[in-house]
Length: 187
Image (cartoon, rainbow, N blue to C red; front, side, top):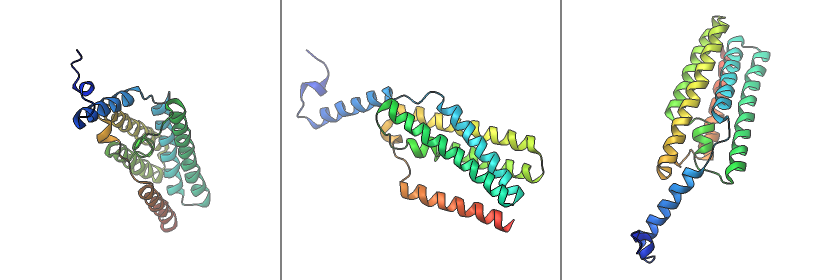
């Protein structure tokens, strides 16, 4: 006789929920990230941070073009990584775009902001080696934070599945662009 109560009484709501929970855990454990996701994300963040620092410090049209090119590199890598995840797994995961690719968690956000601040200061001081070092450190910290979220998601998918809404992400993107423009115009 089977000792699993979920299979003994399919009409019992607790057993149905237990079976669904087990299926969700098996599903999350079977998901795979694209090969090289974290190094690619770290490199894209490093490029974007370095380009933004250069663009902010030069305060020219060419600097703005470099900053926007850095954003384009990041968005291209992000789109490619999301496409690869969907191709590999055949599904979309709530929170993947906002938590991993857009770094909405605390660790990626702090790593990004710290790197952007340090690299921008270094760019104003014309210490380009420090710009590069801060950008790379920010990319590594960002990737580390997203890796932590991925492990937490796989351990408890229900608690970590929620991501920022598309409306919230769009609002934050608009604010970030306005902030960049304000820095370039007023600086």
